[in-house]
Length: 68
Image (tube, rainbow, N blue to C red; front, side):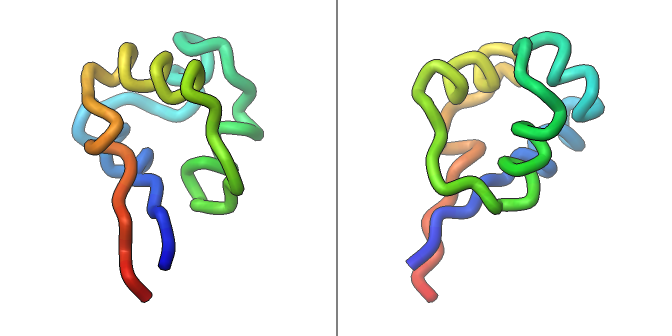
């Protein structure tokens, strides 16, 4: 079982760069890159909330469950 973070998909839909998102949510590029490449082991709700606010999306737009 795996949780996939579709941050790259949402960024493409919103025509926003990772660096622009980093500035708007005040999260380092390194931490966003970890999320984008699905290497994150956890995400704080406050971080998820900030990302959803800026990208104008729901958590379900970013997170996906895949049964391996």
